[in-house]
Image (cartoon, rainbow, N blue to C red; front, side, top):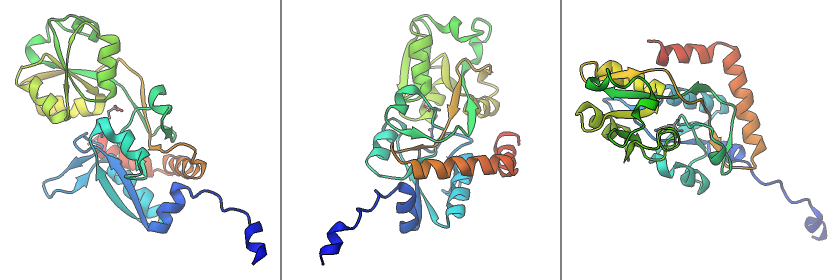
Length: 246
Ligand code: ARG
């Protein structure tokens, strides 16, 4: 009837509404980034982000589905709706923020250096690596890659698709150093004490946050209020202790 055409057009559906309707929260990440997202021996995803994602889904009353995605393509994958949110330890950078929205940071980290053990005497900081004779491994598309390009520009940069490949190069002595987020490097170094040393003072400032498509205030509002709640009620601290202090 004539009245229907006068009805207001419905507001655009938010990701949050789409998730509730679907009954599934689809979370994008790139597994292997310890202790945030790893695969255990049974092939299940575990880690800090995995637990957080499960808590979020539970609170929303939906199931969670993890979509493992190569890091250097993870923003395009979000923008083409392969999943609803990136929960993968993504550093908030001004450049990324031109393309996505970030919820409030859930943790702050920084880049550190894992060195070949035999270089420990001559290299004490990132500045000491700023020479073409030093080879530095990074993971493609990470802030580690950006930090080396920006702050250690003279070093020889080697990019790897996975952090495991980059890590092996240092262990095998093919490169001098690996630059990556502190929590990853702390575990890496402690598990390979015979081969590497950790220069564990972060030389960048990196808040990590969940990323969603732009212009979605409903979803952002839910995530930010949820984060404030779990930071205040002890559940965030319990999770933090489980993954970072055990
Ligand atoms: N924080 C770094 C970045 O934003 C590394 C994150 C890597 N995350 C992952 N799930 N592999 O570039």
